[in-house]
Image (cartoon, rainbow, N blue to C red; front, side, top):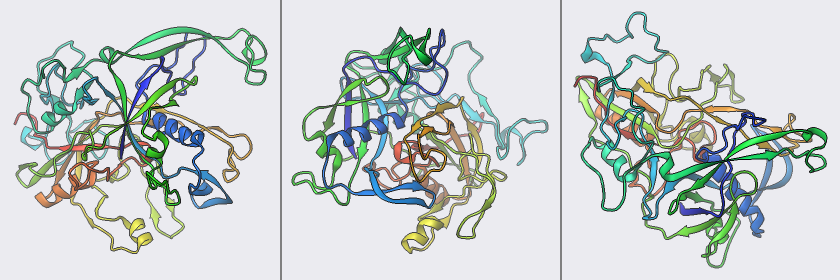
Length: 458
């Protein structure tokens, strides 16, 4: 993966599908979602006019046209994350550590040691398949919680159970939103899409309020990207489209809405990626269970799945999706991932299917969802948008910082689960192996790291 830093040349504009008319400013100044920066790089590759790249057909789900005019399908990204002037990367704070200036875990599942049985308490409103509620170990307070951003060093301390002081000389390990960027509000006039003029047609009498994101001095947007094209062959950069695009020099690319520009700079490779690395062993053991938790560092999308039968004849079970990963059984909480290739990958590559992982989801901390939308260009292979394109489906994504708690039946199973959930898999952090979002994984959704946990009161 290439490490890229984006330096805005002006304020930035990021919006979702919520209304932006009159006094409604929409949601236009939040930190950009992973698909926004992915689309920015994808558009930049098209504008670069690179020759000799692989072209593939339009379509999806086995329905494709014969025309090959789609390019850069090999692009995969991760991020964006805030980066300060000292090249220190920051990540969303885990939701079970809510003390300012600290990585101390303050929320823990109330499990068996608190007198609970294998099933939820009578009258519990916990949705299936959860067994344990999560309790606060701190006294009641009106404090809203800790700073929303923590550094890589602080994240590692959190994963290893350390809550000591982390202040480094001249820098902070914990940041508020207003330390990274500020919001600027402006009033705009609607433009008629047909005439591209204001005050006429659909835009007659329409104004809107919008918020813009201005990064503070010294902060940039960090992004990881990889695009190895099998047909592309650059004399200097081989099949690496990203390096050919940036070409050793800063390049201006459009990021977000309203044609806002950022200067993209390629950082020298340092081997390990600048993301926090999860635990691969040393998980707490209580009785016959080994305790593994998974923390999202980017959002994840798990759609609802209807029952049916696949083309291969395989029976598809219904799944509610939403906050619950599609790779967790909705009734029992059993983890459906395998150690090694899954069924479809094994069939496609003629490999042996990986073995199962004996682990169960028992608790979760899931904040309010974030809205993910988009707009599709005309696609002859898609009957819904064949002629004029249109809005994509709106998804509600689980935000970064969400925590999922698992009980594994053995120490080897705990290791297998960590290798399946950590973004780096069984590597030492040199490559992204696992993207556990059902949708938009290639755009950076579904990256997470593993740690361990304790029952409430232990």
